[in-house]
Length: 111
Length: 113
Image 1 (cartoon, rainbow over the protein chains, first blue to last red):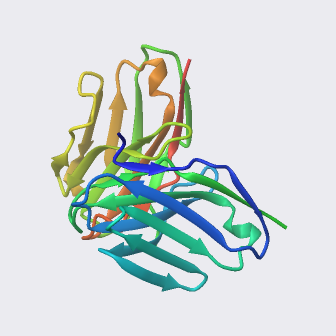
Image 2 (cartoon, one colour; image 1 turned 120 degrees about the horizontal axis):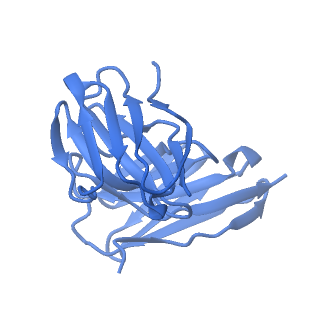
């Protein structure tokens, strides 16, 4: 079993739609949860991170962690064509431990 | 602030040849990472440096891969000899003091024929 599982997609939605991206993880000891965005032929960039359970909002993006079900979500409101990218979830034990990436979900926003 | 620089951006070699990648992290970032990203997969950590020292190289195939970080700044990753399954994007990242906040370079796309 992989430590972090993510549906590879691709996921295609119309502009303006709400997007929901999800991951599951296997180790309850993970405390940090990250979402990275990767455009084609670019390196990943950190979008958001959360510590332990709960929600975190940043503009059109909301990250949610449910530790009881080991489930991580990223919601994108009012999606834009510029949001088209691969979204990678990642987890870590602490702020000073290596992070483990999921395989990424490819998202396409249709104008 | 300048980002993480990597070179070359693309490299095509034949199997059994050797290849080297270079990375210059963001100024002031003590931690440097090398990842391998195979098509359709997430990045996999190969090696992590804290200043000059190696923190984690548990997933580095040491029979063919080597890496060094001179003077705690630039780093090189070498593969010798290359195999077909080494075809991937090699990403370099750096962080100041929190492993969850990493800044990635554009990567080097390696094709082994």
